[in-house]
Image (tube, rainbow, N blue to C red; front, side, top):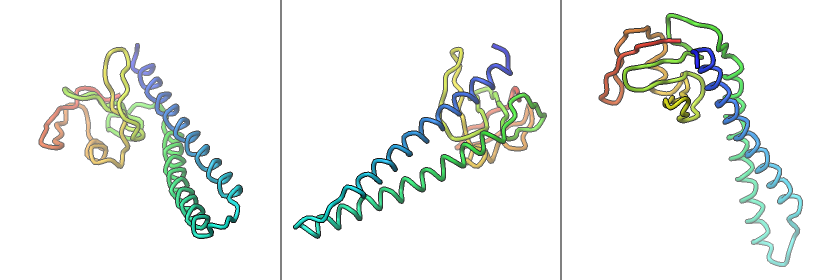
Length: 152
């Protein structure tokens, strides 16, 4: 697998991660809306009000999650995987002597062709450290020092 194919696979896995999160949140919102609509006033008025309040809190939480996922989606849309740079930036694949990173969104670890890659946000602590670095730069994070061996 060449470097462009590798970046494309990581990018596609990030897109799938976002689309799955988006579908889950939209289902939660739809379910909560149906729950709110079907809540009927019963003789246990306090129970009814508590149920509606809980559903409303869940809706607010889902709304915040939806906003975060939409921001992730927008971040992915700004990435051009065919673009290369001598400086680490959004969309860079950073291979170090210890760990490999794809600077995109915080989507966790993916294994491709037997190698592990951590997809991280440029706003994450390690992402902030990596942005602007070049090949052969040494980076320290959490009492670990590693060297950038390849930047794609």
